[in-house]
Length: 319
Ligand code: DGY
Image 1 (cartoon, rainbow, N blue to C red):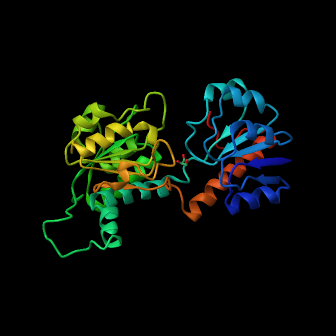
Image 2 (cartoon, helix red, strand yellow; image 1 turned 90 degrees about the horizontal axis):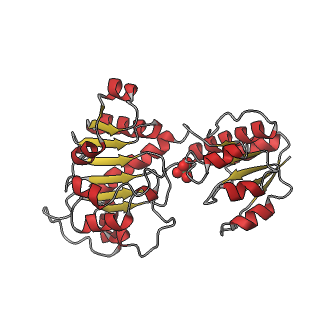
């Protein structure tokens, strides 16, 4: 059976699939395929491992009905129209769980990079501007004992909360649809309203899925409710934040700083003002980018493919 892969697949996934006699065709060019080109390429294939910006919507699905399975190499599936997938009876899998720790590590890193102006200070050295020791300059924020607000306390949010609680004794509040019993018991976390989350967080970290309800949810009105000393951390999806409003909030010091692993659009324009702000740290969507984590994601993606090709229920299905 033949599977098309839209980007390099980590070794573990390749080994699993090839050991089962699956023939892989991997798109290795730097440029993404256009959706019509991808649809054309998929002719004669039985499965797809999808990495990248492809919209899996009704139009796409109506043209790839010959596939047995689509396997995403991500936990997020905001690029998929789930109702259309159900209607088309297309099994679609994702990679939950295995990237929670690595992604939380990235959020934890960004929180500290932002709090201590790491990128700005690094650039002072690069720009021959180390200067003299000034006890009043380049001052950051302490994190010890501060309040962490988690928007979306699922697997990744829980890992982030654990790190913040253990390292800095941070108090954890969160906003979720459902109460997170485990977090309340183990971390003393408290569920609060959305506005209280905005008002009380010293660090507000986003870990929810991108949905119509969360798209553009963090804008001027929300930043105005936040503390002028607060830091926003986003390792979820860039489109949850209104970028123009964020730039204004940082310029006007409505909030103090931002650590972003995700932006909208991606890649971010190299001239984006966020890249030149003192209290901002931006990374190029590397949340899950460790060797072990990416190999585990590839394992789950391969297991989804194998099940889908046999017509079995996917072990990690999005619906
Ligand atoms: C995920 O797994 O959703 C990561 O953000 C990669 O897109």
